[in-house]
Length: 332
Ligand SMILES: O=C(O)CCC(=O)C(=O)O
Ligand SMILES: [Fe+2]
Image (tube, rainbow, N blue to C red; front, side):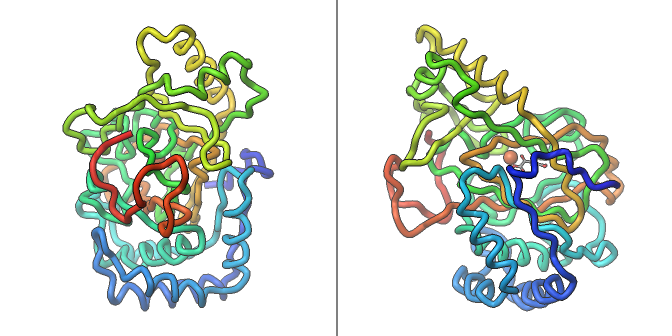
């Protein structure tokens, strides 16, 4: 599988790991994996943070500096070594995916993530696990969630419906698949008309949780703005398949259409390969995935995923309540 460099280089910062850096990270991850429990508290977060302080300086410097650059869509660390034989077959369902063979990689992802932000989980998603799994599942081929395959996973802000959504989404590719590129897109204000920008900045839109969340009903969903400012930073918040305009607001449907068209036009591919770790900026960019053919023979694509917020220590202005590690309930 060839490298795909079709993405705009100025939007993705890339670091290629040196072999001794891989060895050091892997050694640290293996040590952490000895006490890895999985679930909502996989490891004491202090242990992970302290271990991350000991990672190779070049890696720490790269992740720290690039996660501060808010013009980026993503940062990418390439070249981690995934031992395919030891990993064993790709499970068919996320329930079987938190297995001992993959725990070292979960720990490697947690380590690198600690240099970008703080992990959070969702009570309503994959049993509130902190490290979740992205793999194709039988019966979900055409669904609108990450276990899909044959159908394109439409671009989205991760957990766009929620004010508690992640600032970065971390993806570690254990196994890639032909065709299954991750898609990215973003939009600049200059691409949109003044009227559209004004409407998108108002709470004229409803975003429903996607089916990855086990929501009982949509009663907590309040209207939100899709493009605007939050705590001084520009925010983009939309899910192609789950966003609709409020009924009766003149121009809201057209404004949403214009934004969707601009994001459709801007889509590009980032093909993750085994050993790639990518942190998508969930405030600047939307992401999704191209369709691919699942095999269900143990050789399928498999990613480990985390949601990260930049800070759990304080409440951001514009967001209510203290931030917590496990987000409970569905509310916008
Ligand atoms: O499979 C991918 O590349 C992306 C899936 C996705 O959107 C996610 O896991 O949040
Ligand atoms: Fe996603």
